[in-house]
Image (cartoon, rainbow, N blue to C red; front, side, top):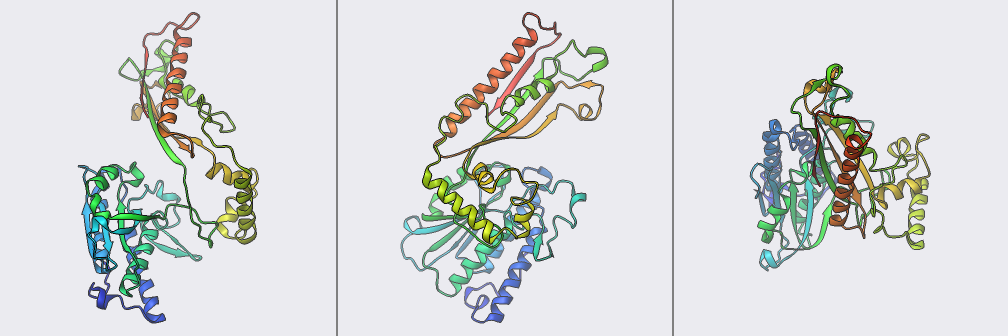
Length: 404
């Protein structure tokens, strides 16, 4: 599937010199986005991998039609969605491996739509409503990718591109960026010598004020599974009280990770967090004042950060979102479908996924090690209390499987 963009040649397909031609170019971009949104490129779902491949090929073909000097699919990890590579040259005669470049990062995979009954329109159909575009991937990240692509193509067509621009658009961002590091390392020469890296997965100050984001919090992910030495779910009316309950143990472990105020309880977790300087606080308060003055009445801002239900002042909200670390439990599950719905069963296993957002001066390896040690200690303490003196006699034992 591709968008009709003239004959695809830079010399004739992208002559944009008049307001009418520019409007036509904008319509082409929206047409491309509409077609791209229809492809259900949800990563991590085997049934939709073919849709991800179609979305990748769509973007590669579109790059060619917009006049890219190179456009291809590259991958180094079997089973992972390919990376879409594109390049617009600027007349630099040096070899690509030696050439300074602008590196544009994005992704074409999207999150699942969730309960589609909660959508006012079909999630994989782009619609306009009240000045906004709706559809899965419109803002994260297909829309921004096309905005950058069409802008670079226009500059290249006009001969105004000062430096070679390379696009690295992956298909596994929502699935842990599986294979991204390996693919870039194997094809390192394709990207030249990046002088600037642009990505669209950052903030605006409201709805009309873009900003330059100079840093974002890092992420440590963890999956934990607690299982009984018995291999099957058992009936609570028959075995309840005499067997261990992995779900209860999991809930206990998760509850020891953060207090009700959200402060992470992992020992040593906050040791590396840099103290907020007076200069940093002043800059943030100036930012808050700008948002309150210029963006407070924007619908999205009014519904969220500035809404009557928002807790605390805007300064505190932004510091929590941008400056301080956090821990999030994403989901919990049990071992079988029957255990999810049947209120008479004691599940044989339970698992959860969580992540920690870290800030500058915190080490990813250090935080991962401290998180692992804390979870293992809380689990061991739970077992000791459960089975030690004064504890219950149990017919089974518990095991922890932890991947950080």
